[in-house]
Each structure stands twice: as C-alpha cells, then as structure tokens.
Amino acid sequence: MTRNDVNRLPVVDHGRMVGIVTRSDLIRAYVHSDEEIARDVKHMIAVLPEPMSSIGVSVEDGIVALSGEVETSAEARLAARMVQDVEGVARIENRLAWEVTTEYAESRWSAFLQEGAAR
Image (cartoon, rainbow, N blue to C red; front, side):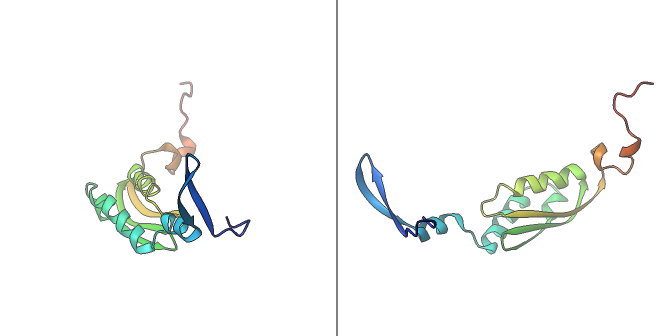
C-alpha cells in the first residue's frame, strides 16, 4: 500500500466486495501504545512467583526494560522470553540481576569447565 500510494483496498469474499480496509485501519490493528504494552507485560509478570512477580517494567517507544532482581539467570531469561510474545514489543532490554548462574556459559568459571573431558 505504501509503495503504490494506495490508501484503501476492497475486501472481497468469493468475488463479492464485502467492505473496504484503509491504511489507518491496518496500522491501528498493529500499533500499541507504551501504556498498553506496559499494562500487558505487568499483568503477565504479576502471576509469576516471587521474586519474579516484582520485576520492574518500563516501556518507551515499544522497547521494554526489565529491572530488579531474580534468583537465577534462568529466571531472567524466562522473563524476557515471556515478554517478547506481548503484542507491540519492539525490543527487550533485560536489566535483571541474579545471584545464581544456572548455565556454564554465563559463569565466570566457564573457561575452566569442559564437558566430556577425559579424566
């Protein structure tokens, strides 16, 4: 529509016109305000067990920032993964802190760990 400067398109069902869709109709269907995104993310996080349910959420231009503390790195990744499915989220900035690292690759000792090494 943008490339060809078309503002309206007919909606056809089995060769019969049943309506018209405008460019603004399409945009409205996909655009969510920062407030709507924040509300949806906060509702999703509120059902999680503590301390995940107290994760801070801020949204600016569709970019969701998660802040606060969780217990493990897996919980931090899970929170970000859940948020990415909320409609309107453009990007996630995961600023969560954790005490327990649950993956070798994220550990400061990962350089010394070798899975499957001969003994």
